Length: 328
Ligand SMILES: C[S@@+](CC[C@H](N)C(=O)[O-])C[C@H]1O[C@@H](n2cnc3c(N)ncnc32)[C@H](O)[C@@H]1O
Image (cartoon, rainbow, N blue to C red; front, side, top):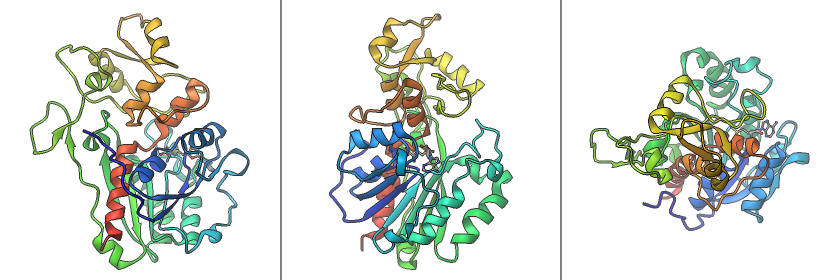
């Protein structure tokens, strides 16, 4: 089943902040939105976007930093402003310092929304952001500054429910500037269920082994959450996110450390326990990227962009749900 059937151009312009390797950008692109610009501070990620879509206007490296940009030049031209502000300040994999973390870019995101005044804003982040420890933060930083201008609904999305072979819970904030848009909007609808679970009328998503085309071992399940290699120890090439993830990879007989640049390199460098060694294209597939979307930079940089990304099929479902609010 094709997860992201390209849609015809819908004439709605999107502005992307914190674009990374382009998970959200790709989802919106395939859902038919027009790309107005991407802003991303990391050279390699900007290079990934430029290579994938040479016609896009990508502000990267020298001019990609969102801090200090006067966004008012975009006012009146943007249907959807979307972005995934860095999630390390709130991630279970990080130290959860929230607003005390210098990487906290939510205030910048909110500033951009207030200056651009898009019809809709979409912001993706780790689900931990809407857990109890951050409720005051969310209230003060996101809801209070924006709820006078926008009707805001946070929605929890689970990647495997959108066909991605991975356990990945995220929150997506949807903000609508007009009551009519808010009224017409329907949240993205899950279409898949986890392998081996009760049939609820949705299709079973692929397990990790099936997605990777590995022979049957009589057991399959979705991949544990892929960790970004840009969080934690520098230059790591492990996508392991937790102890429970390690157990799950062991059950699945997949080796998530020392991820190789290519499938050829992975198969030439057999893991000690004989489990299947992952490569960059495998990890991209686990995140729901099509093979045609190539990442730029050293292996840890490519893995960082992939692990940081909004899974494109989820982004596509999010984008289509937003598009539906515009169709009368
Ligand atoms: C969670 S990732 C976003 C992933 C992206 N939404 C996707 O779907 O692929 C956050 C991104 O914000 C970028 N970033 C951090 N600080 C920034 C800044 N001041 N200006 C622009 N980008 C920044 C990081 O380099 C990182 O790529």
